[in-house]
Length: 198
Image (tube, rainbow, N blue to C red; front, side, top):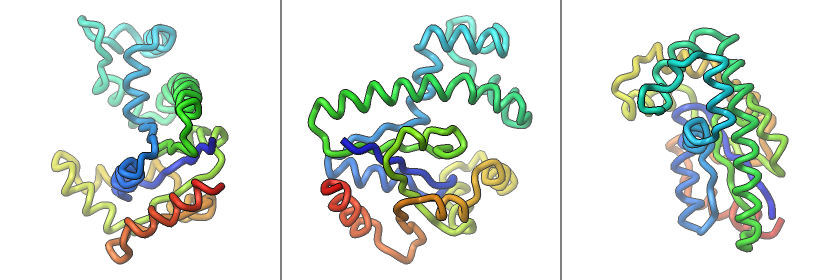
């Protein structure tokens, strides 16, 4: 079974592309959602997070205090690197277990959706990478429509922390163009046909 990564900058539409693959019956591992789950449920990681970031990492009910972690890590590259160094290996292990279950179920391939596929090193677990591409002005406008609590400066700050689109395109094995000019469904159908026959 092939393991295919799918990435793209904020607002590129990678989640929409993943939903199209899911309609075709392709299992999709949502790294962001699973990271949140693992951070809350993996006892070893919970202990590591508390050691690294203090007791306030979890609230009085034992729930992960995501705003607290975000305040610590988002504006401090060293703290963000520390957080990622703790979380990414546990998510990698979770993905490996999930992928093994999908292989046993007989799937030809699976997708791993991750915004930070290269930055986290997760691409090393994968056979091929898809980048979902959209020009930055389109991405910014989409995020501002989707997330009314964000400002243009917020979106630009997030984009600035992600690998450049140029580098993602260079490193990708396949590209889906979600630029409001090209239809997504034919692109996804072509890729599905290719992956089934890999």
